[in-house]
Image 1 (cartoon, rainbow, N blue to C red):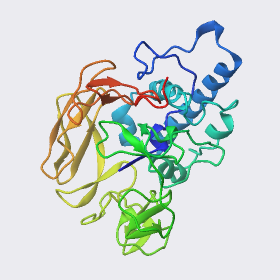
Image 2: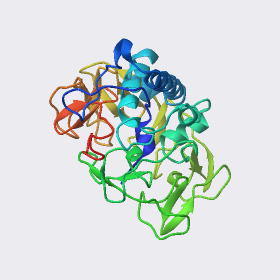
Image 3: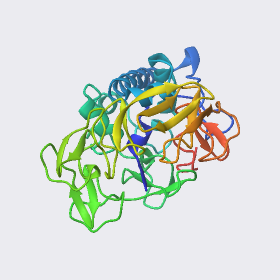
Image 4: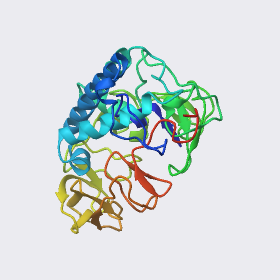
Length: 325
């Protein structure tokens, strides 16, 4: 599996680190902050606000299950952004003005937002690469010369690598942006292109009648696809093979695919454990707060923190030790 630069979608403000250099803190240097630090701070806040507005409009169920409002989303993703992009060796660490890169990310339409989030759209040309050579340890692809961090588990560090060019023999997750692997790297389908499954179409499209088409509305049949083909605010429910409208459940309530016509995410203070499978439902369990002990793949952290080395944290760009702090 790969972890590309868009895994770090909540970008940039200059941020001091705590005693643990792998953890991002909320300090921005106070009144002594330099003009460069202030510029980074402003660019990151703008990016995070646009990112949050985009996902709230284009993926409302997932947004509502992760954040109570736009302000909290923007604040926490600005913190994440500050720690990632300006870490030593990462993409914007040596850039005098981060705005050309960050402002080039377009979250104004759902088409663009979904393609950025799903990594099917190349990141802007104004964004430089990191300095990590192939094989260097990484968590974010912002650290890597080849703009990709390959990782098999998503619970430990990965390694910088190179994405494969169109037409090259491949394995899953190794093709360059905008391409998928079908023995060789092939271009993702646009509206009307032939397809054998929704994963062969751009992220805002689904494979309907063997052609890439708009995602399916609630009530549509969705049996047998290789990626959820349902539109925003809905999910493909395997209990009924139907696109159903998502709603929200409270802490302790059933969640996931409850019956053939009901699917529920959890409110942002909790996460759905073991619910989004055909064997569901699950139950909404409390999210772990920043700094609390956790178990990877078992405990959910308050977004956008993740469970890394048994602790919930918003990870800094040099979390894997390279480039060194």
